[in-house]
Length: 365
Ligand code: DAH
Image 1 (cartoon, helix red, strand yellow):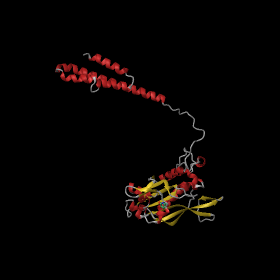
Image 2 (cartoon, rainbow, N blue to C red):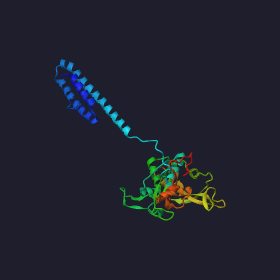
Image 3 (cartoon, rainbow, N blue to C red):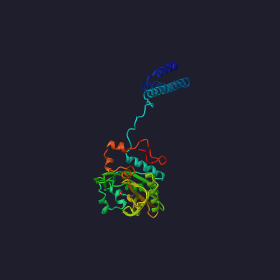
Image 4 (tube, rainbow, N blue to C red):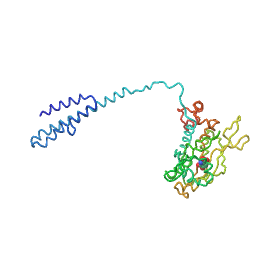
């Protein structure tokens, strides 16, 4: 048998293969289990020692030559396929941008971005939790037991079914359950904000069944009310972009905090409108309730799986829609959720204008 001729013929057919499918068929024909070259290798066993010494290297060389030719042709075919794709899939980067920006960022998204930016600077991460919650995370773990009047006050949307653990399922009525989830998931210390949607069966000029809150939670050692006040002050000055923001902490009650404080912000009346800034006690000024907060209740820290003798913390919760209205001057909450593109075109924000602390968290709309 003339292995040189066999080799020439095989190589010619390989270099003539027009696509990867044809090439693969040749590989099987030569080198597959039933392939012709594989067959030749099997004949070695029946040969005499001398015959094998001369024929063996020839058959091995044949197999190597064919293997190499297959690889070379494969690379060439793949290269050609890529070239063809690159030639056909082009984008023209010289196309002009639209004359006016299209689409805009909804004020709620804008404010969420601003919050994330401001709190990131203070070392807070953004945490999330499910909007479909169970009553343990939404209420019980937050020290709102079943008989507690706060449950009734929350106007909760319940699902008809219970979950696998027999807990009632509901649409979360506040972002506070994320406090519990964060403690259980990451342990301590913690510094998070948790912005998101919340739901209550309530609808009038100032309430919508779905609205947005941001929760804040800090858990560490030796945390006290001073840390809470400084954090909120620093946040609100950055958010409203005014150094003269003055806060008033008023004793209040929330089941999940002890002590609890309601935070008011001072405003002035300018041209019939409320403008934040200055003490609310000054003549022509007033206080506006802005958010709820307090030192995390020991029972809540324990429900989060932490030892309340070791860890303390503060928490706060604020309405994002309200923050947006105050900062950007909208007066009707319902318009936020009407999906009217004219409203969004008017109040929306340029998608290219990303909030940064250095460039200003507010934008030029
Ligand atoms: N969860 C409360 C609500 O929706 C708001 C709130 C008050 C959150 C005080 C807090 C807090 O974290 O400390 O009405």
